[in-house]
Image (cartoon, rainbow, N blue to C red; front, side, top):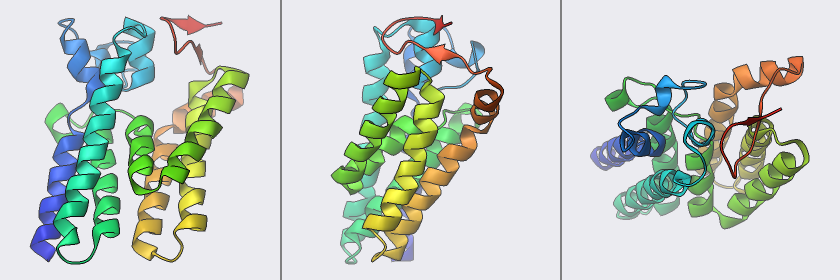
Length: 207
């Protein structure tokens, strides 16, 4: 069984290395990480290339999260641990997205991939995360605030809805905390009133 766990974890991690923002910016003979915040995430991509091709970024990052979770779940389902496999795949694909060895360990912050991990494991959590993020963004136009609140919702939802499965619950807590940690600089800027607002449906920052 431990060999299966390793195979599932490594597969999910390597899928996480497939970064949508990096891949699509490469079509422009460019690297999204050389612009703006230097982050290989959706927000930085939109700020520098516009919202038009961001759907491709979303498809890649969402797709890899779904495939990683389902593949890991199927591998461990042979041992009666399908739910735990989904959780393992979720943690590892997010780690691969944030710390991609194949991309010099310079990835994104994990919010988009993490969101689709939530959809796969428990659609209720995926929906709740969307509602929290959407409300925060519509009211403030701060993507980072929406992301931090969504990440907190992620962790708390797994505590309340999956406390009967310690492994799944722990995976949810880890992803939520890690995503919040990756937004630590944003949190500091929010507290100082220096964070940039973002138009997710266009290009460039808002005043």
